[in-house]
Image 1 (cartoon, rainbow, N blue to C red):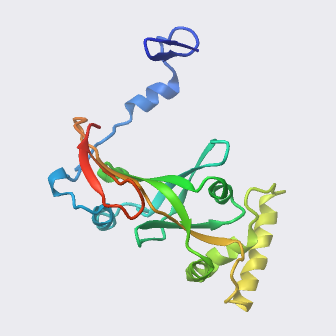
Image 2: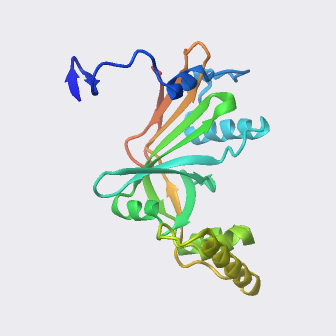
Length: 236
């Protein structure tokens, strides 16, 4: 790998014939369909209001799992890790998600309490990016969130040991079956390792794709949690 004029060159000269995967990828259409419009002049002062509006629009449009977000964390050594989680709520300035304290994301947050999340609503060519510090909501909120989950979800959470070696799918099935019995017998059981977190952003960006690539991108920023927001239209 070498760097020349600010460009990174990897290996030898680029292949001229391409690859099957590259050719397939380049034939996939992007920003297709009847996309919504976004007038940046109408953006409110608070990004939570705009997020709620976009999320509501996605729900009404039938976008699949619009509450799914890609959450990126990094531990003390800076190694990034990303996965898809479910947004539980957006309140008190925080985008909430829950996880097992034994999971990698929880361990990352214990070492580096900052994260970034991305929502992608493909049928609408819309993205929302959120980044900033992550706060623990507390034991009462942890328990309330866990008990609000479906019995099947509670059983799964009680059964698993995140990231540990698993002998076979049968072992997992047996553990979940045993946990389902426990949930039926003891419906008030709460997983002690369950945690509810809130990503309280310092930056929120809204991206509206355009088939001509004239994308609209509005960035909200603030200097500290609790400080007033400012927003501007930025180049895509």
